[in-house]
Image (cartoon, rainbow, N blue to C red; front, side):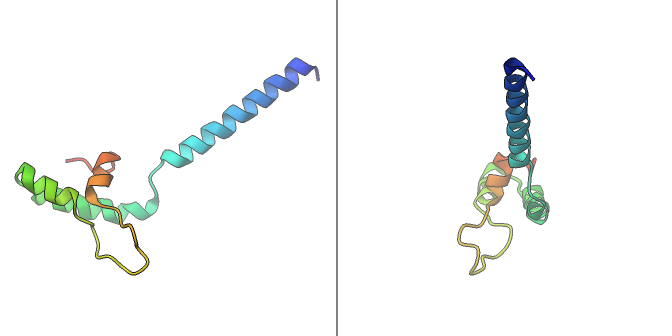
Length: 84
C-alpha cells in the first residue's frame, strides 16, 4: 500500500467511526418509550398554552431515590420525541 492509500483508509475509518458515534448518540434510548407515552397522554389533555407549560415541567413518573435528575416532558418535547 502506498502512503496515500493508507491515508485514505485512515480517513475513511475515522469518518465511519465518527458516523457510528453520532448515530448512536442521537438515537433515543428505549428507556424513554414509557416516558414518551406518558407525556403524550399529558399533552393530549392540555387545552391551553398554560396547561402545556405545566406539562413541560412535569416528570412522567414519580421521582425515586436513584433518579437525581429525572427527565421532564418538556425535555422530551424539545428533543422532538413527543409531538403535540
